[in-house]
Image (cartoon, rainbow, N blue to C red; front, side, top):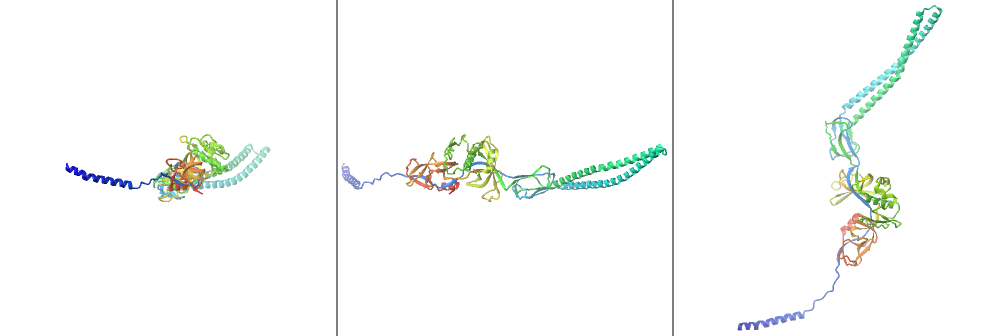
Length: 492
């Protein structure tokens, strides 16, 4: 009992002293400073707008094929006695290279026989000339003999009438005259046949000369040569193999020019040609054009301010609205339009580009896809090749083809930055502002602005949360996007 009482008397003062010290410490500490509520800036990505030009483009895809292809087909039959050692798949041969040489023995003999036949016919012709001279000489003699027989017959007839010659003498004289006359007629007939015989021999010589020309041509055909520089794609001949006429011994693809038939939407081509038509008509490239390519319909402001349907039944200037249904009209106007073309090949992260030219259009629209075959050609398809960097354009490559109209000026922005007819910008105070703009062209993930933006403005390309005009921003410049936009357009 006493020990408990002593514990209380010792502990209680200590507790009271500790509580008093804590209360004094709290009461003597100054009150914490209170801060006011501050606005928090929202981080966004921005790009600096710059004046550029963008070419309206229609794109499609297709396979590369050589513009020229050579099928080495034997025109004569013979045994292959020589095959070019470089005639192997993948090798490139120069123009004039000998590919295959066939045995020429049969054709050398045919030439010798034709020449012998010609000489024989010429000898026969010379013989006819000699015969003609002989016949003419004999004809003169026979004519004199006939005159003698005729004079004898006249003398005997007078004697017979005078009674001094017998009837038998008269008959003998007349028979001799007739016999001589028959001999003269035979000579004349033989001489008359000589022109025909001479003509027959001349025609026979012509036949033999044709045979000689054929044999000489066949002799030349035993050598198969390459008419232009080409790359070997297939070989089907060996030395000692019998090659028959009409048999293909090799296939080669020209290396100078490659062509691509790309399938492009008829509507995209119509829009491209419509812009080209406007350019030819003298309408300014900076003219305000409002369109919505993502919807089912669009509107386009012409120089007179009259709207035209973009997707539907609107008719383009110069009758271009009907081009999608009449592919032959493309070829008629292709030479008069400034159409640029390029061929692109994606290799990993790199995009390789070859300048091309529009050559022609296919004859009909594909009924399944509604696309038109557009054929472009690339010159020097192998000359631009760089080992390890740029391959040559070879058969079977799957590439993208672009057709470009003349470039139009404006501010190039990402298409995703559009919010209807407005874009977001950061003002000088880093505040969010919504600016109405006029879109001249939407192409892929890009949009070309002609009104509403000026060079040097900061365009917001990411969506702030919340999206409220006047929102304080913390802009971060997207250098990669700026570089991509610079590559897509040409700065002025």
